[in-house]
Amino acid sequence: MSTGKHGISDKLKGTEKNIWVDFGKLAAECKALNLGQGFPDFMPPQHVLDALVNAAKSDNVTVNQYTRSQGHPRLVKALAKLYSPLIGQTIDPMSQLLVSVGAYGALFCAIQGLVNPGDEVIIIEPFFDCYEPMVRVAGAVPRFIPLRPTKSGKTTSSADWKLDPQELESLFNEKTKLILMNTPNNPLGKVFTKDELELIAGLCIKYDVVCIADEVYEWLVYKANKHIKIASLPGMFERTLTIGSAGKTFNVTGWKLGWTVGPEHLMLGMRTMHQNCNYTCPTILQEAIAASFEVELGRLDSPDSYLHQLPVDLEPKRDRLAQMLQDVGMSPVIPEGGYFMLADISTFDTPTSDEDEPKDFKFVKWMTKEKKLASIPPSAFYSKEHKHMGENFIRVCFIKEDATLQKAEQILKEWKSSLGK
Ligand code: IK2
Image (cartoon, rainbow, N blue to C red):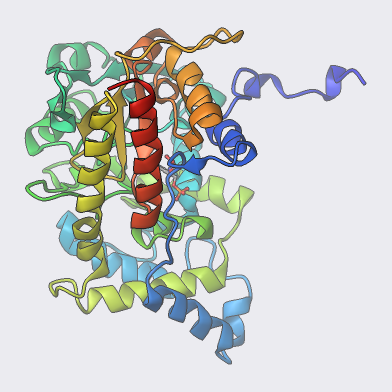
């Protein structure tokens, strides 16, 4: 049947492809060891699971019904308590917080709620892949600026990837409505320094631009690094929407709960979008995440804190993965935060393929099918004009059981011996 007038709407044309859909399917079809999409293969913390069970078993009938559109009161109160000291502002739970369907939902509502057709939106590359389609669907014009590696070698750090201040300022003009930034960054793992954040903040203030700070990996920073909220810098709270995710904070990516903190005037558009497309998020999940944060709020400074313990547990996994990738001949970029690692594959030949696609797409597909090891092609995190900057890398996820990493090591060892190394 011809789709004709019943086909995809014009505004969605060009955004049909999605790496999570395509590469998730490929990994499953090939029964590959999945170091692709970012989710843990171990259980979430017990107190989070207990909180959900307690909510389900409680005789509080309201947890099974719709809750407040902007966010379940118990959850927004807990989030306000958590973020007020981190941002250095007393956050009003009822007007300066919005709970969404994951950070995805927050990004979508924030962009739709703020931009008009023809507005320009600056996006720092590499970027979480949905930013570009979300900006285009809103009718805005994305302007891209890449972080560029300043070093090369067998192992480098995500800290070596930097913005050019002149190039960044050249993108700001009277049409610029928003800048979208992500720290710790996915896929690179870069944690923006205070100087870098001050550069962005200064330009936002100078050109009257709003910053969307995607901080879903805010708790995942490794030794010697510190996550700084751009909203905490002078003059920035009133022009920043800070986005977080329960999926990333508590390792429950399937729960799809996210939130945004920001001043009421910036929240109006996104709140309007949210109430008209989702109205509210699952009450029982919000109740469970609220109870989980209440536990964490009581032990933020203690070694029992899950939020502080998770990066301590992940750091050896990061280092182990880096070593195995290096052993097979790749050059890992050691992330300062998040749970992904880029690895340079330029010493490997491009696999033959009939598809006209970047090298990393061909390489990841080949590796998934032939080596039964799934990863993600980083050129998907770049604009069309900058895809070449990502195509000599693969992105590998290390929030996995040691047994999974052990299997990956075995695959890479066999691969290495087949190369005669
Ligand atoms: N923003 C960033 C930077 C994210 O990484 C994610 C989740 N991404 O995870 C998939 C992957 O990269 O493998 C989101 C937003 C969306 O978060 P949520 O799951 O809360 O919607």
